[in-house]
Length: 180
Image 1 (cartoon, one colour):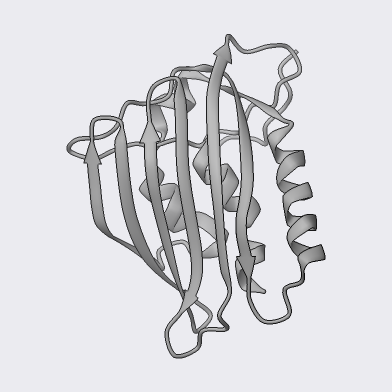
Image 2 (cartoon, rainbow, N blue to C red; image 1 turned 180 degrees about the horizontal axis):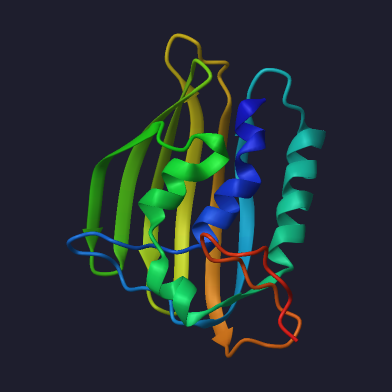
């Protein structure tokens, strides 16, 4: 199912934070961040309970990681750009119905990828030290396969970066290395 292929990218997107807008939510504070990702619903043709369990196990592995958000990364965070680049859909998403007020955010995006239409909806809160976002990804339109993924992502700042934490690369830089 095409939706399953975007889950890990989606998790990374949410960990990448929120960004530019005329009333942008606060940028994440640099430091050590952890996350918990809960699969609420994973459905579609041929999706079994065992596959939902496997998906949750994969998200548990992602949740076990801590990420070092550098000051440079924090300054560049932009959720809309991350969203439109997600899952190989770069330039193929249109963000609509965007509401940002203080720490609250909500938006919908309509994406096209290889003849398939996907709707991505997100709603929740984002502060400089914590994020709680519900994300829904669903196949829509005439070519819909009925696939749907709903997940809750909670992330929080745990203090300063620690040796050995994964530090994501900045755009246009070499691949990331663990902090030592």
